[in-house]
Image (cartoon, rainbow, N blue to C red; front, top):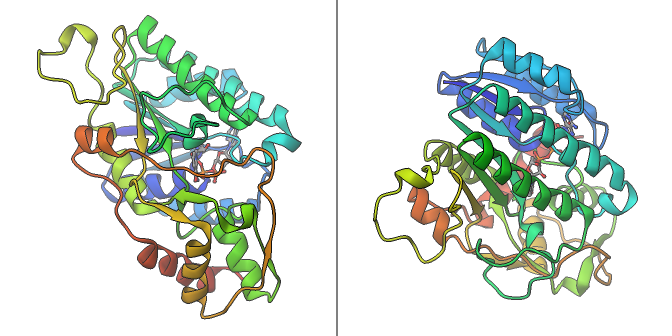
Length: 337
Ligand SMILES: NC(=O)c1ccc[n+]([C@@H]2O[C@H](COP(=O)([O-])OP(=O)(O)OC[C@H]3O[C@@H](n4cnc5c(N)ncnc54)[C@H](O)[C@@H]3O)[C@@H](O)[C@H]2O)c1
């Protein structure tokens, strides 16, 4: 298969591309190497991918519509995995325009390319942040997501809606994923687990927001990649092709398009304090903790319903933090000074 993966220098794109290349697929990678975090880390990920002959990297921003179209024309991808985005909840308060440019305009250009260069399946990354201020848990895909509390969440929900229109108008089989706090080796330096490890090892205090009362449904990177690979192989059927099989209780299959949105999360939320304890255990160091209130834009908790995911692919993320955090710490000690 020929895959086009956007965001291949990023945390998730790197892991997915490496898995696909190891399995013998061709991967065309697009990444603009943004300076949101350490570009050297992105270059080191790319250097690993470049060892595979099946990898063809392109470096440009998705806002460059002509460049996006050119890559589709040159490489004719069968599957498109759109992961490139301006991520991060708190940074969206400081630099909202980056989210409009990368997430709205960038995704629009990918959709336009798929319109004129048909693909077997377009899959794209959204986020648990799309559930916004919802209080009902677990978060089910059929819950309303109309109260985002950051522009990050608003732009990601917009990409889901834009993708639905394109799936309907241009018959593009499309799956949108809502990821739940992904962590692991080669992870993102802006995320809490990475910041905690860095500060604890440097003997600096760590800030614990919402006085440690927050909770997150954490997803280990290998489980996320496994879920994506399985979902890619399960494109949503066109409305006319759906048989009379009983539908699952929760489903977001569109009545007018080959489109579905699905959570990728295990359904095991963990309190922030327990998460910190896992990191302390893995590092063998006790953290100095400073309790802080919940920052603007942060949600108190995330908790995925994994029912739809399990129904579609017969699998859900299940690596416990007691396995995933030591794997991250081992990588961190070996690769980060
Ligand atoms: N990591 C998580 O916990 C998490 C949770 C929910 C959703 N997501 C989503 O998953 C996707 C991948 O996230 P990640 O953690 O790998 O982030 P990342 O920041 O590590 O990777 C994103 C990559 O996209 C590139 N990029 C950004 N804007 C671009 C643009 N306009 N044009 C071209 N390249 C651009 C960046 O250089 C980066 O390498 C994103 O869409 C993100 O919103 C991630």
